[in-house]
Image (cartoon, rainbow, N blue to C red; front, side):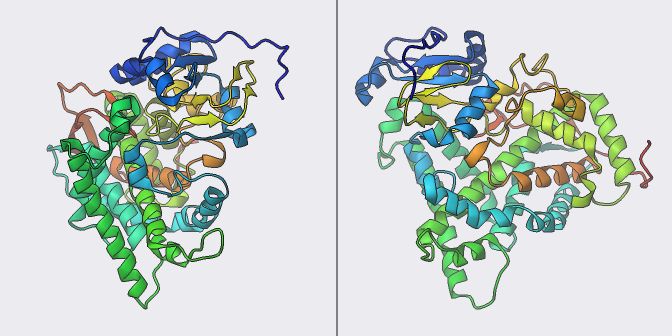
Length: 471
């Protein structure tokens, strides 16, 4: 119970439209607007405007951006039961259905318990040979002194890996269609988040963007149902996620339906490759800009690996590479914002702000990670921020690339191992140089991706024989 005699600090925020609230500013420059919110305090109130208030029949409808890590911990961990996920746009619901990304309560906890073993522990390390061999085969296709679209290459690579994990077979002709459907879906999701009109327009309305989305995802969906049907008819056992789902039960002990399995497969297919591909793309982009960091990485790879492929056991010795990876995720977190949380009841945050019932809470890793209070010169790429000593001086929950609490990313361990093994395999073989004349900006769709293809020049590197690391 909140003591009403204690006054809540007055919450402010940047000036917004009285009719349309913060949405025009979010549409115009989402990432810049979130950074701008840092200047208005630990909790920033963003009115949603009269149009949304009338639509929702709710006075003073607002979102609240959290800028302080203690408040973030409170909402995501300490008092997480007071918050639920806000409704998502129709196209996002259509894509993921009732998969683990969107469910709540006991159903969500049960789904996590079923799926967690496949993405942690011995299961994860068992995938290391698959990841490195796929990366080696991919980089072997790159000719010396030729130009590649590194984002497309990373997406194809991570999609090939997740396809094998889900279905136990190699990706064939589906790859290009899947990637194109994902790109269309991402932009439509972002549009529906930014525009009330877009969010209330049914998907069956035959406008071009709806037709493109429906065509692509119907193809993916049909392929998933085909896999499910074929596997139900098969006699031989398989060691993949699809088999795990076919043997799983729901909260009442019943086998999962085809639709429930489809929802989980779609969730892992999209979330399990797109985020890692984007993280790798941004890492290659950053390494191409900072020659001294790249040189130190090359030295570490030579010392630890020499001329062999990496494995999971090597990762604990590749400490500087892990620092590079963490700093890349700080600057360009693929999950640039978490799903908005809605408060069930009034809640006082640790910094003193009182959130009303139904308040929409916005937590953005992009915003937290680029806050000068927690990261000096926050736009600079500096892997040393993630040395053991530097991390001990920083408050918890200032760095949350995988979220936190009960909805922390289920595949975090796998994603990190996959990203590091791909980074080590490719960086040991080639050096990637950003082609001159490109301006690369982050585009905040469902994930944080470059707004244009990132063209990079491939240069083969000499590999040294392994020798003990220098003390």
